[in-house]
Image (cartoon, rainbow, N blue to C red; front, side, top):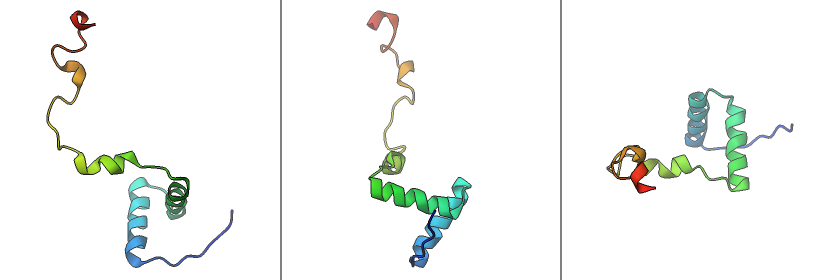
Length: 74
């Protein structure tokens, strides 16, 4: 593996370090994942959906909703 040096803003450094701590992984691994995701165009769907969490009402498990999925409706 190659070692690189890059200058990043303090705020970005803090975000990367917090992310690494939350995931209990090395700082370098967090940076490698972020770079890979950026360069390969990976999409973090959980992060995209986060603002909408809890926005909708209804049963959390549609299989429990009456009238759907039962033997009479197949």
